[in-house]
Structure formats: structure tokens, C-alpha cells
Image (tube, rainbow, N blue to C red; front, side):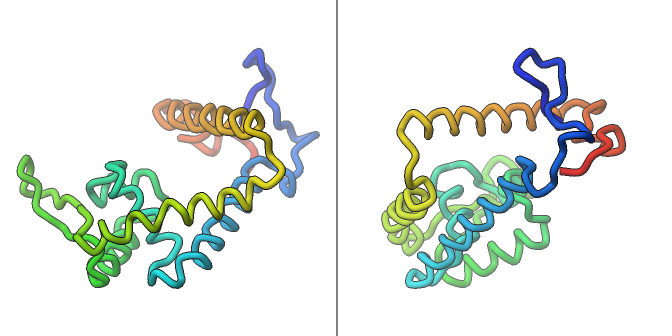
Length: 175
């Protein structure tokens, strides 16, 4: 549950909460449509939108293990293992045992994966530009600022055992 600019009043209350217009619903809807658009664009490259996200994370150093990728995504470990298996079967990634901890398997792009990488950012630009049509640069910067603030709030709430995010029974309302 968010608060107003002073941080004292809840923005959503039982009186004004409309599930069809909630920020959670809007973000989920847009996220799903973005992923679907990535799926459509990536068809010719032989990967899905979900695989695109994982490959970009690995390529940009934002996830070098399955555990790190699970933390940012909504995949459980079994789903992530299957996703990584498919990417490995396509010859796009490889698993290599960590030098620091032999229990850990590090992920890296193969030569084929590195060859595909330069084709991937233009897909993001095309999909994002289509979804941001009509936005000004200032609106985009403001929107990114809002999303980053939500991300920070989410990260802080996840660390707070008293938070409704950690203990849903405290919140009283669903997203």
C-alpha cells in the first residue's frame, strides 16, 4: 500500500480501491503486453521474449547464476532451470563451475549468444518505442523515476518483516 507525498496517508483505501484501475493491474497488463510484443519480434531469431530477457541479463552482467536470475524474475528454480536448459540446447549460453565456489554454476553467453546479442537491443528499442508512443522525453524520465521509486520501496518492504509485502495478512487488500 502506498502513501501520499508526505508519507502518512494510504493512497489506496477500501473506499477508493478499484481492482481494474490499480497500479498493480496496470503494470501487470503492460508487462504482459511488452513480453508478448518481444515474443512477436523475436520469432525470427528463434527465441522467446522471456528468453530475450534472460539473455540480456546474462549479457549485461545482471545475472550470472540461476539464483540471481530467479531473484529478479518471477520464475521458481525449476522453471529457471528449464529456461536455461533450452538456452543451452540452442547453443546461446553455457554453464561453467565457479572458480570461487564449486557448488555454483556461472552462466555466460557462448560465441553464438554473443553473436545474437547485437541484434537484441534494437528489438527493445522498437517494442518500447511502440509502447511509449506519444510520451515526451520529460514524461519518460518522470515515469522511470516513479518506477524506480516503486522498485526501491519494494526492495525496502521486502527487507521489513512488519511490511504487508512480507506479511500479506497485515495489508487487508490484494494488489
